[in-house]
Image (cartoon, rainbow, N blue to C red; front, side):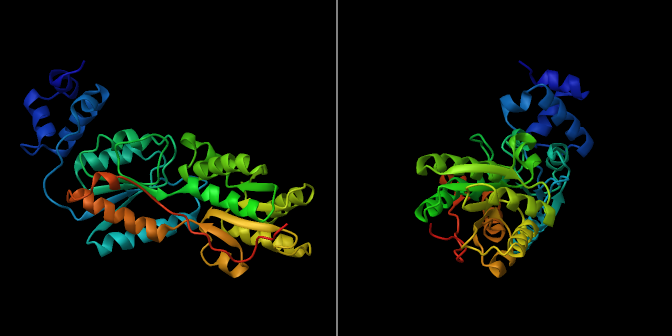
Length: 337
């Protein structure tokens, strides 16, 4: 098992330098500190002995690690980033946005150089490569979004398991026994185990559907344009389904309703429709579509508050995994069968 001598040898520094990095007893240059920490990670020394001491001094900056991918929804991304920015400013912090696609290398550099006082992870996947690094972080770190496994990182999220149950319960109560589930972009269900909120909601819906004896057909919505909405609607019409639950974005929802109206279909008489785990802003309200929305303002405010309490040492153990109840905005788009 690797010891401090091995770390020093690999990093090309003295044993005392490694000790100073780990204890924080003396200031060490950023490049040397980064080299020591990289060596310690490669040898498994951090996992055995814990992370290094944080750098002294407050920066009044926090980092938001939120990778940008080709499939990123800019509507969702902007909503979460701007709400986090506002929440941070209200509490006296500026925000450094980290957008690298994999996220872990950029995050490692920020942690090792002590550029920020704390970090929030966002756009968390089920098998997120940032989580392992987060558990060894030398600075306070929280996750807005819950990955697959139990982790030693405080996190906050909407309860998507409860949301899936509520959706199926609503459909069952209104007599629907066959539905079409229109998921988001297929890649978002695959990358690093899938986006946590998409996977949790989809899994919960299938589990609840089995209990309520509701059959689910599935279709991914890789495009948001009118043709994609028409194709989905064509599949719905040619099936025995009576409702659509969509995880598509606001543009897709708008096009789906427009395609239905172009065919002379009425909502909810001819098509019952629910938008689930989405951020449609004012579109869902304008179209009068039932919605189980994402809640960026609430999550970012609570997440930033959690990070500040973690930084000042007042975060209690029971708060370290917080799920908030979903909201159901009922607008009359579900018919009784």
